[in-house]
Amino acid sequence: MVAAVYPDQRACGDHDSRVTKALNLLKNTRMLRWSALLLSSLFVVRSLHADSAPEVRNEVIVSVKDQRLMLLQNGALVTTYPVSTSKFGIGDSSGRMTTPIGAMAVAQKIGDHAPTGAVFHNRRFTGEIIRPNAPGRDPIITRIIWLRGLEASTSRAFSRCIYIHGTPEEKKIGQPASYGCIRMKSKDVTALYSQLPIGAVVQVVSDKLPHVAKARTVYQIQAPDAPVEKGRPAPFVKSQGATRRF
Image 1: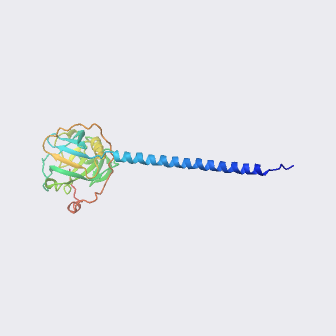
Image 2: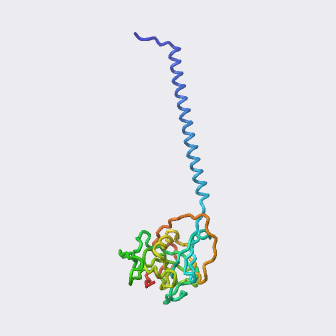
Image 3: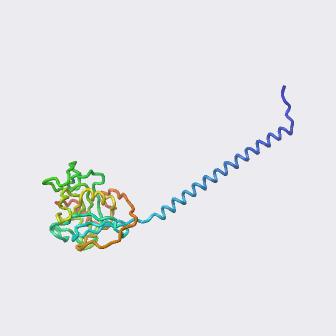
């Protein structure tokens, strides 16, 4: 037997269906609105975080008198490291194995993923690895931070291949022992390398390091390897092939 469907019952069923669809539509609309509001809030939070992130400026001061290097962040002291500058004194004359005095900048960084003790010849990893204070050995190792001059007193720094680099002669760190470059222990130059981006200023002074307030907060950065500096003045580009002992 087929049950009779009266007009009022059919109309009631249609009405319920329309109400259900309307409620579902309203629910979906509210969910979309909440999703849009949530995404908008996340975007605003990220934008505020990006805007509030401090600008970090890392730079270095090297004291010939103290034989120490000071890492600064936004003008405040981060740490210091012992170094070795030239045993032939200071200056920037061609043909002299002296350490230039004045302002320089990081021009190239070489050895980004090289192991500690990696030996470099002509700025290329030879595949050899040597331990600290290996007898009779004095190559450039671990990392190379190539500097270019920013003023007249350092104008030949790049062509003279003035680096901050690692040395196996760690027992001589803390006294003038280089052939013009700034030598560091392997662990120290590795730490410094990651904190100095291309263009970071390196100031070499003949006097003692200045008294600087210690940084309350230190922001760690990972400055990438940059084998070729963009925008280097033409006079420095011509001298990339210069090599000698450091």
